[in-house]
Image (cartoon, rainbow, N blue to C red; front, side, top):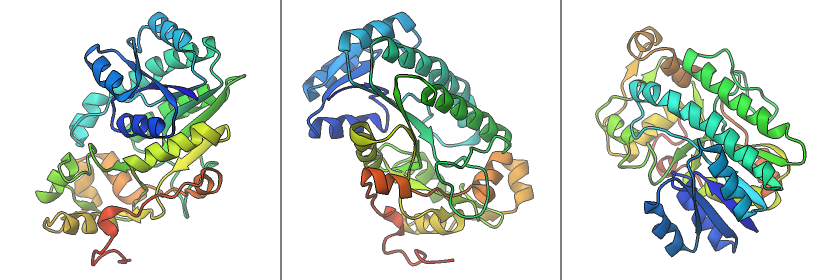
Length: 312
């Protein structure tokens, strides 16, 4: 198939391009920088130059490319994972998702694209018992920043899935780890953990669902090839409470054990988001992706052969 990728230079975009080429697909990659053209060309990828905020340029690129499938991975996240950096990046990240994504989606429809895949989020489900599935709504009443982001993602999903004559697929990814992510050994969270700056909040019962970036790429290609319209939760097999994964992560990094702070101190120092992620977040089930996409995610690398891997 001919597949058009928006967001091809991001942390998922790079392994996604490699997976698409390995499966024999013709790939067109959207970029606003002529500096990326040579890299794409050397990979065997056709570059399409346009700014995602220029609706006419994006439409021209899509109409010229005439792909069967569009995969949109547009985000603008910071290199550091702190409350300050995330807050600073939030307005532009929201804009590129809403405005930039709307331009790509409209252009895809104008070009007669058959199928459209969009990056979404697996870890903002309404808190509750058990694992969230594709029918679980996102948490629109969580901490202020999470609620705002959940509203944004809900709007994006509805905009895509309600389009007539388009097979829309929302891929709700878990927390990325692997090369180029915050959780890589040279990433920002790893650095924070080494300096005991990433604590366990309260009871540490917030459940995180993980996903290696290479597995994200593999699942995305499978969804492009044979997924059904709708939502897929793309996560690994082992959702884990913070008190489990963070202790194991520190051990894997040969870092000191994480500190523990009270909910009250976390609220005062880091805000309500830190409390949500640390104590309230709900894990996600990947059963649908495994069943329909034959998704087989790898084990979370720092939970393998660690003393706390089976801690309660």
